[in-house]
Image: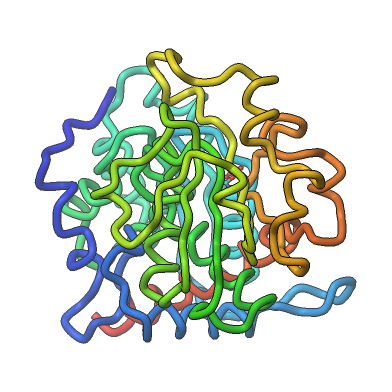
Length: 332
Ligand code: CP
């Protein structure tokens, strides 16, 4: 059963996620998260990275806590990394199989939440196709529970934004002089929204959002970004290029949306098209990738690609966020 989301649930998310001291109680959005807090989270995440081939970092920061992963939309990376992040932080982790859960029998999302609350779950990680669901849950759960947004419609995907920021910082050091191009279906992309919010807060030099006109964002949703419909204009001198897939599951009417071949010819990131980018450009993709559509396959696996590093960073960022909300939880 779909949740009844009030417009109020979409407002004030930024304030709702912080306690009176400005510490993170929930993570709903990167909008309104200030630079100092963003940098603190990225610094914390770096401490959870270990050298490839060595054992992964572990902590006992969430020992005794219980995390429930509630993914009401498909996921590979986010769900697996929240699962690993919870276990590597010492928590008990429950991965609810939505397809065999009582939501399939018509149970409301709130009844599902209240059921888990009664089982003493401390952190709920939520992905849902409806805008406003994470904040709606925050407004209804017991005060000690933390809600983490793991992907909210086309609105936001804050932990993805954090792992993208961390990956860029690892390669480029600072943000002020960077030209970042995000290329693809910007209009329907929660990844583009969260990355844009975080990059803007960190003072990125230039943020270009590149898409066919039919997939361009509402300019009011991305203040500070330059909206571009020509790929060469987007890629010229770019230090960072992030390719996005077309989110066909969110597009009701495909009128004006290019077909596969036309899309790759005009917006696909390929070695040939990248010749005008900075010589040390890095290539990012949040996944899942459609090779040969938004990105040339050989480029995704090539030396400029940081796509698998994004995945590695995803676990570290989620450990950092879990640790932060559990510390706030312990203080209340
Ligand atoms: N980037 C991302 O959210 O991937 P998943 O849909 O596999 O979680």
